[in-house]
Image (tube, rainbow, N blue to C red):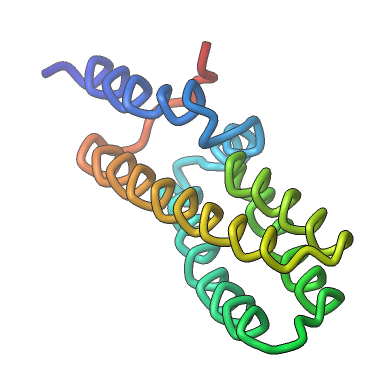
Length: 150
């Protein structure tokens, strides 16, 4: 297969991540920072995100097990998680973080727990989708320039 065709295939595999609302414009901005000098920049940033966010998820889980819930602490932890998720363009994860924080402000523990379960589901789904995308991108090699989705 011709190299340009392979790059189109990678772009086509990425497009559903935007169409289905998993990623937003921030992911494209990361891709624009990638070049020949650092062809795996986006994958490295996303890998760091997943490594660091695993610690935050654990901290949130532990805080949710405490009785009574410390909504201020939960809000602070989720604020950090939301910031990290925003930095890679994790749109659905970020939306769940926002909802979680609203439940914290309302003192709604059940809402926090329910939203956190959904957040972990979105987080895991995105991780699997990005792993597949990066695997394909590594096989094809670096593109000339990042292509914006339609």
